[in-house]
Length: 245
Image (cartoon, rainbow, N blue to C red):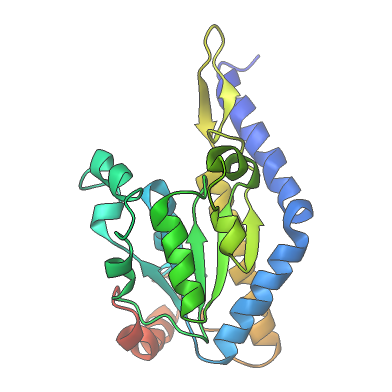
């Protein structure tokens, strides 16, 4: 018998949910890949925004080995966790706080804007999606449909605004493993599944571009042969439009 039954249960639950992702999101993944492919062919950019833990998906895609170089993270320390988690939680709920952040990024009609939010209802999330739409970008949400329906309580959800919705399937509260003898639940899944959805879309787009002889702009791991030359070329191409390179 395993000495780590809870760890095993969590990993089994996560694996099962990963297997279900394609069934849950087949049409949305195709639509998202179509949108990012159009953006790539138009020399546009794929911006990624999230607050709190969701911001990690913006960093996941940024300057990533095996990832598309056209991705641009939207990062604001005040809405992340490392400089004050309590303050960032309050700020993401404050109307008007996100507009100055997005003013740094020239999101336009040939671009895609991914909005990552598990609950899908906070002010920063909603306003970022609205700004993206107003600028003509294709807005793609990565969210939990179940959680956001419960959390909305009559409010607008990011899923209501986005052009395309990728459902991470997370339950309300995110955690999936019960703690015996209590009402506690542990083992959040939204970050792992969100990263998988994001990378699935970008992998699809990369293969499509290469198949169309469009030279997919993909970073190589720095320790792989030829990586320096490939990555330096991509950095030179995107540095003027990505403030985080």
